[in-house]
Image (cartoon, rainbow, N blue to C red; front, side):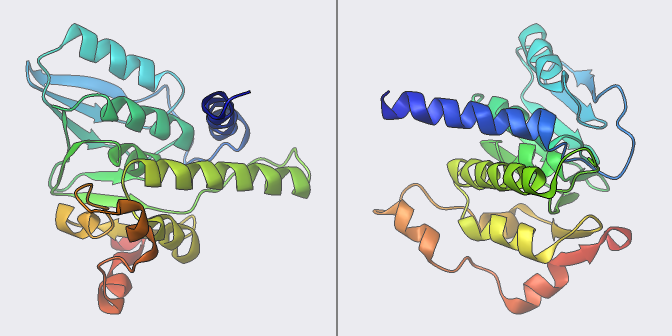
Length: 226
């Protein structure tokens, strides 16, 4: 089996774990899914919790409204596998602006989806936290194995979207269910983006990202502080 087929199988397996096994979610009961709300022919809002079916809902909306150029994200999160799939859909649209309006929040799975946007605007809060599960039906080894697979795929996804591996490291090492890594501006997030015009962009993953200890201290916040 060639490398491309093996890579495809690995990605599909990991995504299946993210969506249906690990059940990474926010600390609320998931609703029927997010709403795609049309503001006008060029602007829409994605609002609500991320559940299965949301990616198809987004794709259907974009097919029916091909002139949409700006999508505002306002979501507390949900299933991170859905966020990854949605982010991949964003990546396929070069002209779509993915934005967070002032006073709105894009949290958890929504934040991972946001990373897929080729054009981004942050006026509100972009907030990441470490994945967690409420599942009690599996052994410690099964949960650990699934967690490793999901974590590895999230790292791959973050780096595939052009971000420094340190972003994923900070999310996993500095946050938890109620503690977040918060970005208040696009400039802050761009500290972790690897510019594609570098001569050796892969080598940039080994260099420190552009943040200071003071910035990190301010960026790690409890949910009540966002």
